[in-house]
Image 1 (cartoon, rainbow, N blue to C red):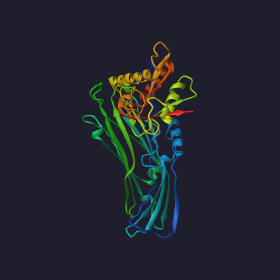
Image 2 (cartoon, rainbow, N blue to C red):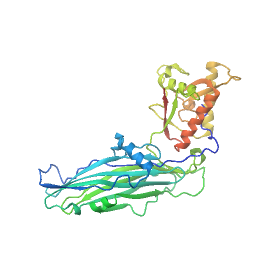
Image 3 (cartoon, one colour):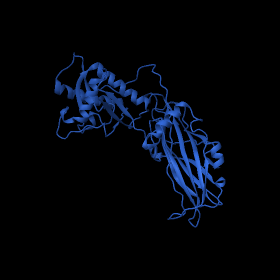
Image 4 (cartoon, rainbow, N blue to C red):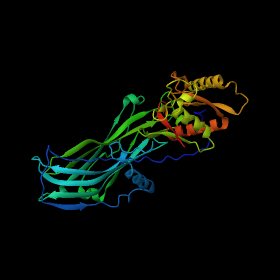
Length: 391
């Protein structure tokens, strides 16, 4: 399949932002054991409508987030390279130094994150909503404080020379329940400086992580902290045309898939070849006992080097001619899977590939679909992705 080609000129794209909502179920205790029943008063502390401060796109993502079990993790549900979310109710028991229960606290923690294609920037909107308290006699929940602190780290080994991230002016918010209820949302943005020009020798990659730690405190209780309440892995780059827009930011833990369908007449032959290679590899060429072909559960990895791509194509064409003879002058072309623009292509040396003669138009359209996935997801050299064929 002739992939790795420039996309159709003039094709415009708009990157949707990525939303990340992160939280976890917590218990705050000074030691082992639990306190017995107490004479407590329930004090509801419910904030304003959770979606009142966000736009329709964010509302839609929040709805999707609630339906995904992955949202109930520190990493959250990473919907795409530009949208990710986690949401989970938080429950705390506040204990004093003698391990006596001072009160209970419930709230919903959300953090919405947005990364951008065309900009070296990532935004987060954090919120604490639907707060409720239950305190023992004599305890005053108005004195309880909830603190959020955002920080970032840089993975130098996965970054280019002199990697830098610029943090927002304010990264910590520590307020009482009334203040969080009145204003549940706050925003942060992280950026990464660049030289302002494309450098073929340096993609100006910065790989980092933004983390949230939280603290809940009371004058009468032992403070609780979680040093990694939630985290978000991001990457900034200035790769140029090969990635679509010249620069951008992505959430690196998103699963990227090229999806094709057997019912799509424009690429049905390409789709059938890929599905046969994935599910019936021993019936594809080259044929050998025990053959497997990656891409379904084992990812493929993009290869941008044009010389290496051409070497893959040349070897695949030789294999096609060996099996089917000279097909020049026909409307057929040699389709290869894994694609020539991957490190798993035919020259890798393990023979875990397949070639087949298919209609040239189908082959070309399939190649454009691959390029579209690369560009719309900012797939850089070595980045993993999967291939899924729908019936």
